[in-house]
Amino acid sequence: MNYAQIRKLDVTNGPNIRTTLFVSGCTHNCNGCFNKDQQNFNYGTPFTKETEDEFIKLTMNPMVKGVNILGGEPMQQIKDNTLLNLLRRIKKETKKPIWMWSGYTFEQIIDNPKRLELLKEVDVFNRWKI
Picture: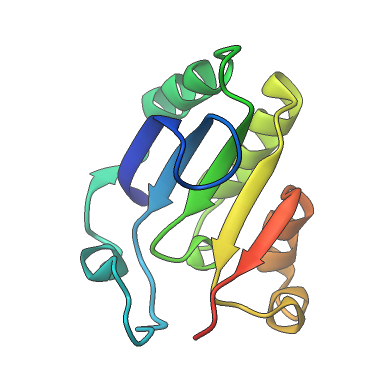
């Protein structure tokens, strides 16, 4: 998985201060998309074990009240378990709520076992209209 950006102290994508991950890759091609560069799965930087460890460390900051996962399309990060592993670590190690934005409907997500695994780790699911 590649990522486009990490915001350490994000105040624009949810309530309070949050740590945000923008994943790379999306095939929806939504009308009016403002993250066109992030549609390319190869855009950005590889999400390594070191990146994951740093993200967890950022999230443990007492000022951070939760995590946001945006994109690109988080629900298309199912070629491997990189995102799933991160979400599980966030839940286990930080206990902070996870918000995710996606273009998929609930029905489309539960129809795919790997997407459903991701959803089970999310506290608030926000759907973009595509």
